[in-house]
Length: 134
Image (tube, rainbow, N blue to C red; front, top):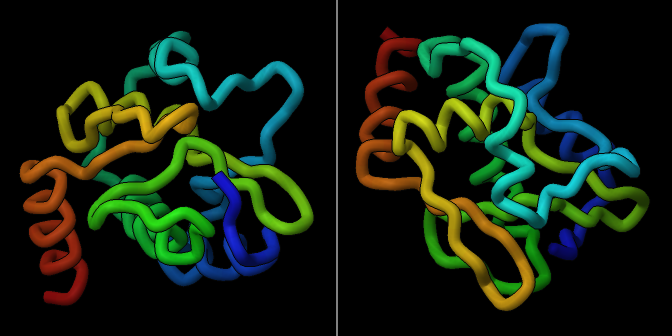
């Protein structure tokens, strides 16, 4: 989905939500297929959504959504972010665990795959961000 920003903006924003080394956003590689749901669910890795990285990732994806050139529903973010200079995608491991825990649900908007944050995902964000500030 076209995003009216450059990728450097996404990287700077990612660093505001997560201070670790492994940012939860990646450049799309030729072998990636982020517009297909089954691509997101392959190669399971044991992860937990209880890390600062997962919380920061979800905050990042939602913060990038308003820059979409196509208006997205509230609490929804694209599976592929086509910035002015390159294409990026959410972290595959993060999305897999968010899908597995039913914190996000996949939806198609035309030919575009998007993820909608569920009510459980919204509570997760509220609870986790409250923990970080207390």
